[in-house]
Length: 305
Length: 207
Image (spheres, each protein chain N blue to C red):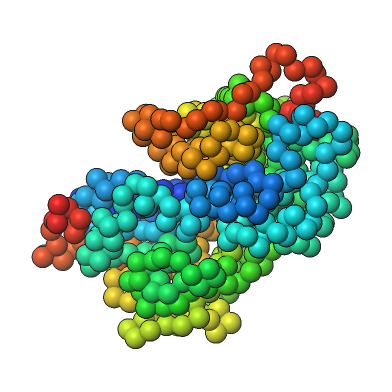
């Protein structure tokens, strides 16, 4: 941490681990992390300027179509992608499935996503991420989910959004909820912070740190429903520090071109002229799903809490 | 007027660099276009992904103007991916670079993120016990003439300087100890104080 605030004390973390894990996530800022399902897509993503890839067997849109239980990917597929690119390779595990996480750490995956996109393995406990040396990223819908995941040891937070829909509305809802709940902590007295900590189910020192610093103690990225350069820039202007894109690129008409455009949009997220330029002639975007037509059991964001 | 340091802001931990530099009493500016290079006193190439930066340098038509700025003799500070951009030779894989610093670097030369961490540095130039945080760090396997090694880790050079160029395999901008950033800020102040200094970058002078 480089500002006037001291490094937050998270139980179970040493300051050095915090710098190393959070420092890794800081290197991804201003970048795009792309879902890929094979080495060829990974190379396309790297050439397009992705700062990392997320290796998985099916992008969320296909998980929706396919149905059934979605699990962590075949180690052989992940190893193939690790060989294919020089940028960091992330992979997903089911919520609470710490053995899948142990396996990814044994494979030296650079970052583990404990993800609601896969079918949860534990409906009570998420993984104790403090015991791993590998940094974890976790999804959130609001400040409470974000701080509970950080308390469990997550080194990066992303909005959940509604993965595999190509519809950014849920990611926007989650980012706005997170940012406004951080602002609401400003100026609270000790008693009020204690009350808020009980409501959020996290230690009061974590809440006090966020109240004082007016940000999360770990990088805050966005995921779930980004389909266009404009969507990516929207999430950045709302406060995201980097963007995950999955189905939005892979299921579009020209993935390589769209990938390059979204990378540039994230760098220039505050420059509408560049956004106009990169958005021209990108071909067919992902078709997308209206969230209101999704039955409750098909909504991934409500997994984990 | 405080010296103005440009920080390449295409991707990476440029905000950490800005915060660390400002704490040392210099101004900063995020550099995303050739116009942003005008009027700088120094330049920082931050950590991040070098492949992403290379791609964007081309897309933004920034490769040549940034190169002119880096060659202008102003102080340059490069960390991790930034150091890879400056190195004369890059391996694993071989990739393009400015070649301004006669060193050979191997990308991810200390392994993947699992092998990242904070290590005590061996150095006579830095206070005893100074540590460095290495994140998927590049490894310097050879140094050419004129390169001064300021710090080592298990014998490997990890902080090097050649004239106005200072480069680190690790991340001096992270953590609470900014002794290396302070060293660079002193270089910037010394350079900005020179009477012949025009405050204009080479990019602008040649424009």
